[in-house]
Amino acid sequence: MPVELLYALLRNPASTGAVLPSSQRLANAMASAAVGADAVIELGAGTGPVTEALLRKLPGVPLIAVELQPTLVRRLRARFPAADVRQASAKQVVDGLMALPGQVVLVSSLPFRSLPKDVVTETVDSICRFLGHNDERKLVQFTYQPRAPFAAPRHLRWQRRAVVWRNTPPAGIWELQADR
Ligand SMILES: C[S@@+](CC[C@H](N)C(=O)[O-])C[C@H]1O[C@@H](n2cnc3c(N)ncnc32)[C@H](O)[C@@H]1O
Image (tube, rainbow, N blue to C red):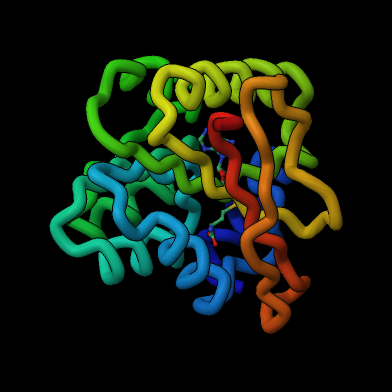
């Protein structure tokens, strides 16, 4: 485990959620699901494996990487000067970018199953409002559970796109978008 993730986990276990960083296979599968996007907003960038895969697989596509914890933000900024790394909550950033044009993909490693309930509620509301604005938008989210990451309102629909077996533990990659 990278030492930064260990410290983050010790400081704030519920919001960090993971004991291991995302594997390269999981990071690549998440980034592949965003190919074709005009812009990407990564939520919960952590130690950066998904950020790295996004920059590699979507060269030239604007990437905003959002992370709450200052030590992880410093590391992300030093490692990925091409990304716009913001120290903020996912809700703050998503609310502020509601009017962004084009096909915007949210790529999230947020640990919805361990975050405090009020944070889950406000973040899910914000993401669902964002997706409801424009049919082209979608959320890509991984989960270790055998079901959808969170309950979505009727106008949106979850689809499981892949399972990454060679990750510890195996992870499902789900997409949420307007039910067309
Ligand atoms: C599962 S961990 C990191 C996953 C990342 N792919 C990795 O391998 O390092 C989830 C990250 O989400 C961040 N986080 C938790 N709640 C957040 C929120 N409301 N807004 C932004 N980031 C948040 C945590 O600080 C943590 O770094």
